[in-house]
Length: 464
Picture 1 (cartoon, rainbow, N blue to C red):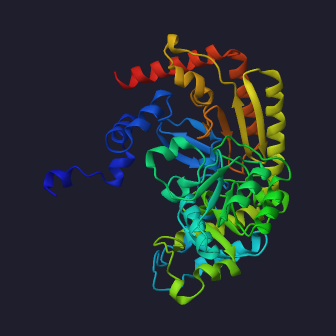
Picture 2 (cartoon, one colour):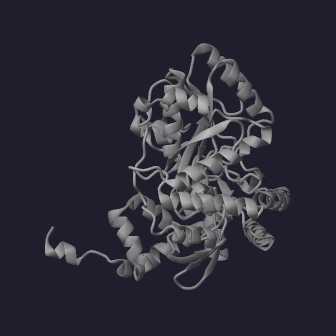
Picture 3 (spheres, one colour):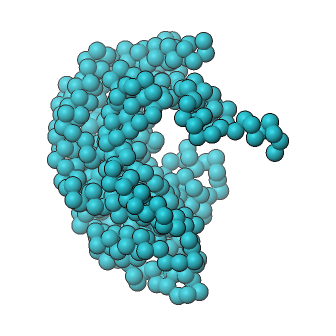
């Protein structure tokens, strides 16, 4: 390392003072240039400098309302004071000390055992959703003594290799093939197809989302999860329920599987577990299953994590559970979700551009019609046909200062996943803003033309 390199390093103070254009250029050169270009096309690369609750402020002092909610990671909102206070209280604790038994991790594991369904008792802490899924798959194979894994079409469980192997979209899988072997895909919501594959192979586990989040906020038929539970018990297949996006109150219950009184064998958590402050994830299982896989001293270190259960993450998790329960945010999610859905359903009836509104609690998807080819007005065919929701999201962001985004597996669906602390007034503002967009742009060509103008405007300003 030479002196020129050292002199060019950014300090924290330097970084805080960066302009929007400087940040854009840093990401374009040193991070992900393709994503930077995509974000910039529709003016999604704004410079935000402050956040609290459901509000975010940019460097110019403009206030935005956040209805993206960190893809479900901000159930208690941005920078909740009690989560920040919890992290501050233990600032002198060892953050990471593996040659010990961390008290905060033990307490959080106890609390999770108290609020989760069934006999879930043992917790392994990690740092993210995909790590939780990786660990759950390994646990299932080790406990069952079998290799096969069954998953659903259109599912999303993460992008590390094991998680990707049970993620049901080929776009994300193909570039990394061959993936983990003996993974089998079935249609989501089809219990007959599941039983058919159980009769054909003897898998270790079936992994399923109670609601397919990245799939477009999709719900299985009523009773599906109950049938899945029965089939897994009948054929001695471990049931892994992925509650990474749906858990901790998002759907109006502490866990979405509780809507059908399902007791998983393994449960995956992450996102909001860290209170929106610190990355935190976990997978949980029963004492019997844990002991089969990792119960003896010689197996106790088969699966480990350096940062999993660190002091600040555990403190944030403890505070998050208190906020959810003491603030009755789960009931509020159900009540405000019903209110939100009712208003959106009325828009669906009124405007043809909305194909369907669906949701539960504050996990809501608005699917827009897919149509058109707007290459002649400056929007590519791919963008115009498959990314209608991104154009609507751009209108919401740039003209109404509402933050949202489309779902990964269905880019024609806008997700509405605000913090559970969202107010009725904010819900009403989002609905009225969406109606203004739909009334002003009654046709697909109109909204896409507006998106093209936004692209041209931002492209010109950033290259002038």
